[in-house]
Length: 492
Image 1 (cartoon, rainbow, N blue to C red):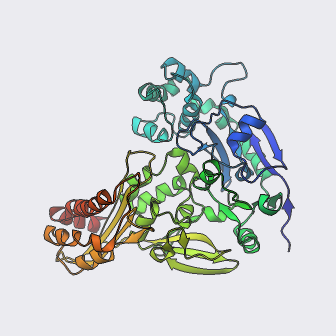
Image 2 (spheres, rainbow, N blue to C red):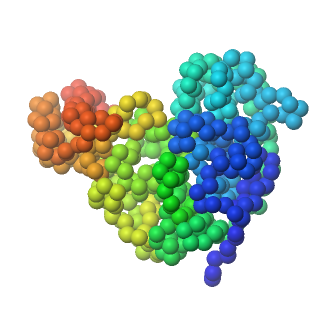
Image 3 (cartoon, helix red, strand yellow):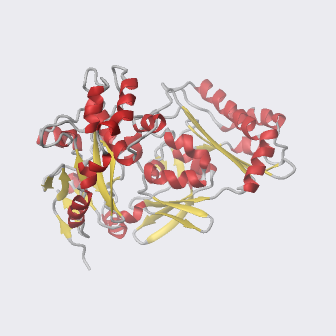
């Protein structure tokens, strides 16, 4: 049976239904808002998803429930909005002209200075307030990781976030009180038709299901796949690349599934960092800090774990951790599937074990054994919202006598691909997990890696960092710490 085709993208913009039949594959939500709809409260600051001046909320249905998240309009493509509800800062003020509680709190605490970034901060705080009307400082700072204030007014902004519920009641907020109505409207927009607009290299395709996507990609193997667009968005805004035809995965619910299969955790390739977070932290609490330092809140709401793996960047945040955990990539072409150990998926710089027409469908992650020691360390120039200079993942399995049974050590930023330190691993296996063993193994890093010098770090810095991270891992897990961790593992 042939898939039905729809030739328009449909979504809600504030309180208006938008139907677009002339959408360019690379048209950003920011350009649409500012140029087409004259909604200029959403600002362009960096055009790469870093500064947050363009922050809006996007609501979408999943499992029949409506959830709003902050996103970067500058790298979010209009083609990915089918069936969504876009909320901009212009929608916040009441019909009587009164300020929204988030806006009033910003005014009352003098949290706006030059004002350029203010709408973005307001929208990020709005998204947080809906989820948590009484957030603590840690939650506020996490929600604002992706918003930059050039006037350095963060203290006042945090005070504003703490005081919103003193100004208004979140239960009376329109996005909450009208949720049932918006859910109904989005349900009406949701159908099983494939969206196709344009032709040739200008074509935009939004498959309705994963099977539909497999067929589309089989017929258009040269197409660019766009999941969260946190990487591909920059190809357009910064590098002016022609990426058409484009296939958007935003409507495929099957790719957003999280499940457990025996001893394995399975993440659909379309699962965002935000969606994965609760499950990841429950199974692998050692990943909490890393996960909280992936981009900012907007990037985590858009970016997908599958996309981070599929792109094959040597400095991607998740591949070292996934290699350390022994994950496999589940690939699909048409109806044919195959599994590849994630360490073998990365072949060379910008080259992965994936043929044309094949895509990452899911990632399978085994749970840690009771006697596995595991940690991941991200080193970057700034703590938040920065790309790794070096990222190291360490998993060492130690027997009751303190001898290393197995070791997996993987790094990003040390080679043209995410890569294991095979020589260091060999030196550790069979040795007693002690300081002497670690000091000896540290000297072998030079046999495993020849890092490059770039603007993020020098080769010497990277090499010294890799060695010191192994030492840090031992200091956190060896000696008395090993006894404590083993007791914890047994109790757990």
